[in-house]
Image (cartoon, rainbow, N blue to C red; front, side, top):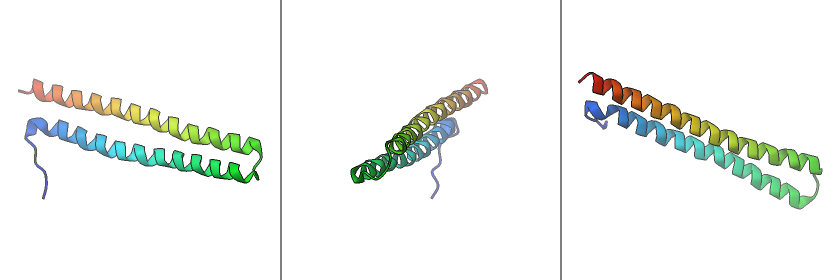
Length: 94
């Protein structure tokens, strides 16, 4: 069963699907950063890794998180621009 939208709402439907998929991917990548943070905390409790290695792993987890946030923000800006362009072109063709 396919969801059908009126032609005027197709850009909004496309935008909604893109944002939902993007949000799911954002959460999955953020979970990788959280899992890495948990792994680093666990390694710290064993006191077997040198401090420089733990510091580097903390930088990696923060890097993954902030690149994810920046990429998701950029993705949202691009999708909003695409939505506005599609709505504008649809309005102009009326």
